[in-house]
Image 1 (tube, rainbow, N blue to C red):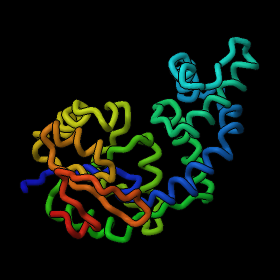
Image 2 (cartoon, rainbow, N blue to C red; image 1 turned 90 degrees about the horizontal axis):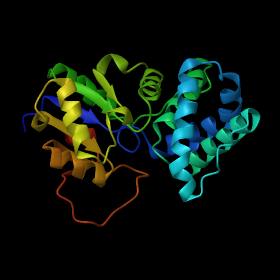
Image 3 (cartoon, rainbow, N blue to C red; image 1 turned 30 degrees about the vertical axis):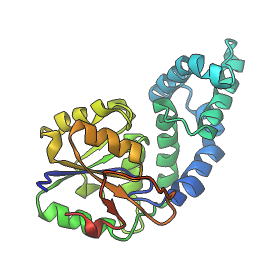
Length: 239
């Protein structure tokens, strides 16, 4: 394979799912209401809250709590909607923006330190030495990705990472997202190797023309389906 760039999913690929579900998500839940109330004048959070109001119209058909029109009720009902999105595991860009800011504060206070698999740092060192571009693509916000890799138990890994992509480039199960990433990286999509624990995401990348590898890690859901994607258990198996 002629790999010029390695594009990595995060949860279940570089980072144990348990760190996200047992540390990051509970932290975002614990501080969600307090953070939103304390940042109503913050421009980025205001835009995210306005987007939540737009998204709420469609999600109400799926049982989401309605965001009220009264100013006080609107804030409280938006917070309830924030928790509903978390419970539904929605890949909402606005939700991920708020969560990323909450985690940013948690890392800054020293209350969070991220866990990555032991083979990640050696692989990044190897890829950097080989001149490969290293990028991340996650449903978590770019800020959340940066903070996770800046505060690992192995130190700051952000110097190894050339680019970050989140749902603003498109959904991870959408073929066109990978073409947009390739255009941003200024290289043909066929020269990108995408590594993820999600077969649906890998299918989209493969349809776009990228190379793929299915990350099967401890703690990941197990599947017995047939797949066109090479299976790896460690980054040591990657070129």
